[in-house]
Length: 210
Ligand SMILES: C[S@@+](CC[C@H](N)C(=O)[O-])C[C@H]1O[C@@H](n2cnc3c(N)ncnc32)[C@H](O)[C@@H]1O
Image (tube, rainbow, N blue to C red):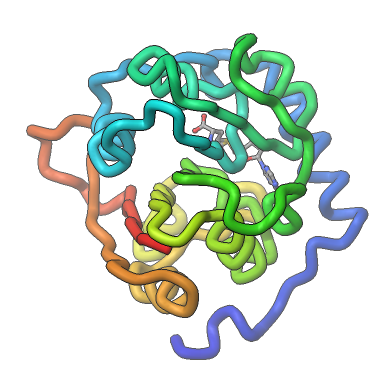
């Protein structure tokens, strides 16, 4: 367990290109990669609750896809300054006006250190390949006291869904350990789509404060 991320896989230029092309293609599939999300879904509510008032705050959606979470955040907090980053420019074309759309990799965020008040990554870290680097980057761009949410799938459930070969799911302790290197108040909880439905163990949410 302790050495899990030491068997380092590299996000080589070839692999990065392959992942980007796969998501460019996936952007045409609105059913499985939707551009909107029901704001009652607990994944959204958890992020909103944990971040609190975002008026005037800078918020980064890491691996934002079509920006479905950022849309809800913008509706709830029109004075927040939202930015989505994604490796796929085809996905970014769906991000609505008023939300920044930046092409890049979460393993090398093109932002200066300590410039965001909050950041979140929903079902995107699992595609980063260089997981430790991506976690470090998310922490780096947060201001001291800035808040981070990562929502991804639970390693214990791996195999339940079809996955591309580069995708990784995480054990709760694995990500907790990485986050604790840079953040405090690190916690992890199982979540389901609906608050009143018992989590079935597929999704985990990690919360942390820089
Ligand atoms: C399953 S989608 C989730 C999108 C969005 N977070 C959501 O919940 O709707 C995964 C996203 O991660 C992006 N992605 C994959 N690898 C990435 C990387 N290295 N850097 C930034 N984005 C990446 C993909 O292009 C895709 O849009």
